[in-house]
Image (cartoon, rainbow, N blue to C red):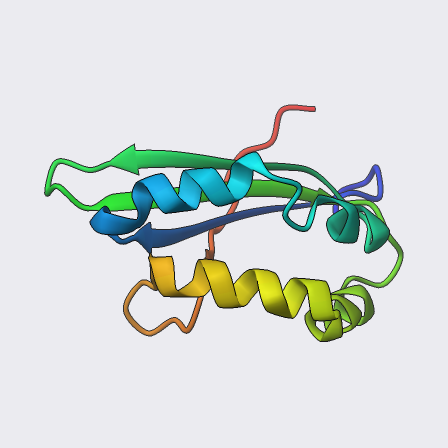
Length: 112
């Protein structure tokens, strides 16, 4: 957590080539936006990038503005709306080797 009390998270995961349009369409709707805010997650961004090897990756960034990250994430994981959302999005993704889902990236620079 930074001195300003905000935890900043960056993550990466692969996206299946044949799922790109479906994944984009899912995110055009409300998805889990309200749930994320309920559990103190704001400024959630997802970026897509095709790499030189032809694979597509998602890079995500969000900020946590709460007091107990682990407790909030445990509650979010039990939310029926979140569970239903992940049932739609998880099959479109390909985790990095040795990961079950999104891989949290190491932050090496921050410019407040």
